[in-house]
Length: 299
Image 1 (tube, one colour):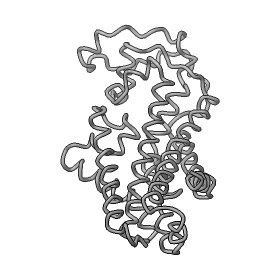
Image 2: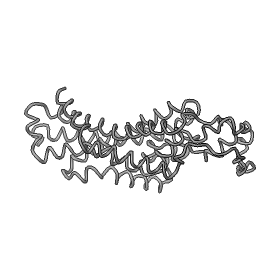
Image 3: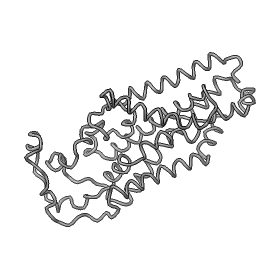
Image 4: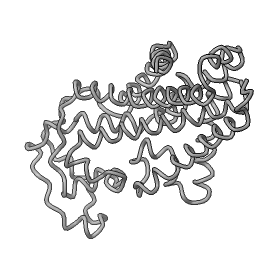
């Protein structure tokens, strides 16, 4: 337990964990500046819905409720939730999340092995316990490295903008504005009902995403001590897998959409968790094989 605590503190207080958080927050801020107004002042009272092409909306949308007067929801036109959604889903943060998961700690096992430090640790603990601590701390550090920037940035958008959504649920304008992805995505029903819970669950998904790819990165140390291969392989693998699944015509199963389920229509629990589960189980299988092969003389 003491060793577990020491390793966790070492991972969280490392300069690489801090750097990972800084880069992630910077990417989120740049995306917000690029794709969402920083000025929270709502637009003037004009009829800005005149471009809504009602005739081309699907029949079910035409039967929706009329648009409420702008005076009733103008205050929430620019709001914390939509700003957060735009920052997390529209820029480079989702791609960086692969690296954010591995950067804090994923290469520590390989580095300790290369420097012969692991031999001294194994004088005090069993090989299985040593690997359990390394992978547990790595998973927690990777999950926090992805989830904390998402949580911190929600705090920023909540400070910058009003914490409310326009009362447009069930109206024609909602269907037009949504381009439909957020309303046909995993957990979409929660967005207008309880946006705080919706974003909390999105942050939890980010934590799970970080755990999976941090574990995947550290499992690569079974084959190499090269820290750059360990840190960057999950990123390269994620990009190649995305191209492959897109080529096969099933892009909804791309693991990246676990982090941004609104990035494509049709995401649900069955498209998000199985890909992550397969990657996680394969990573654990690699670790188990290594334990079996090197149970007597691991290093």
